[in-house]
Length: 151
Image 1 (cartoon, rainbow, N blue to C red):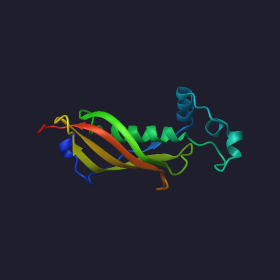
Image 2: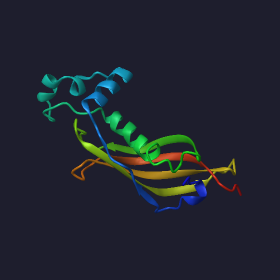
Image 3: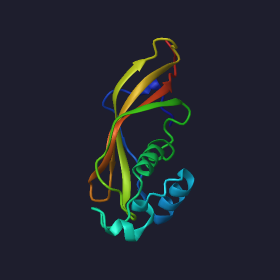
Image 4: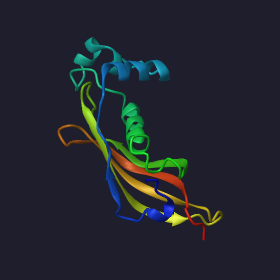
């Protein structure tokens, strides 16, 4: 079932499917972005850090959160127009290789567009949680979403 701006009310919430973060994911992300910082790519280096082992890039966690919210649920496939931004995003904890993460998200604000009646802006509070129910990332994501019935 596709959801539109008009279907989204403050307080509505969802939980995503989960995903395990693998060494291959981190290697692929490092190759794609060019971010080969040794905390993510060198076990010997990482052993000497506060983490004691390699951890995933923070932006990889954010990227997976976005994918888990949208691509895996499909509820906004036809209605999302654009990703407008992130606010107050916090990398609250490390994501380790082998961690299984999921996302809970809720509508915290919405407003019709003041210039285009066929769309509106929706803010989602997002929480990325690992398999131990520890929140490892959180913040607000803002999306531009089409209206089913423009007013």
